[in-house]
Structures are given as C-alpha cells and as structure tokens.
Image 1 (cartoon, rainbow, N blue to C red):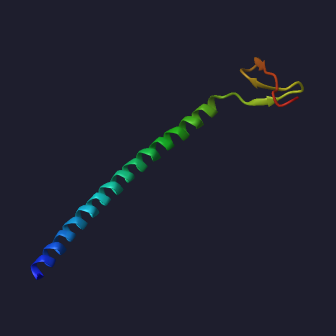
Image 2 (image 1 turned 90 degrees about the vertical axis):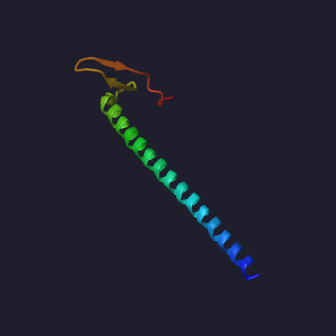
Image 3 (image 1 turned 60 degrees about the horizontal axis):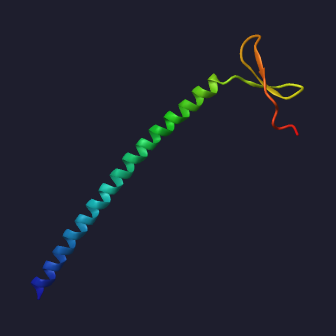
Length: 83
C-alpha cells in the first residue's frame, strides 16, 4: 500500500510540474503579446501626433468654421454646429 500512495504522489507531482510549465508558457505568451501591443500603441500615438501636426488649424469665422490652407488661401466650410 505504501508504494501505491508513493506512486500516486509522484504522479501528482509530475502532473503539477506539467501544469506549472503550461502556466509559465501562458504567462510568457501574454508578456510577448503585451510588448507587441505596447509597441503598436506607441506607433499609433506617433501617427496621431504626425497627422495632427499636418492638419491645418481650424478657425472660427462669422459665418462658420474654416481651415487655413496656406498664407492667403483659405477654404470655407459650412459650420455643422450652427442650426
């Protein structure tokens, strides 16, 4: 009887080691995904900053809003906020 319980304890330890190894692999995968997502987030933030820097400044006029395109060139747009 003692050998039977020893074998089952040993089998349980082996199974627990497998489970811990599986958990370790899952944690490693999650960390890799988090790092990739962090890099993608940083890249997306930089793209937003770049796009924002290229956008002309929206100004408010008497008849609505407009964007300045160049020094003397302006393009008027209907202000959708006024009803």
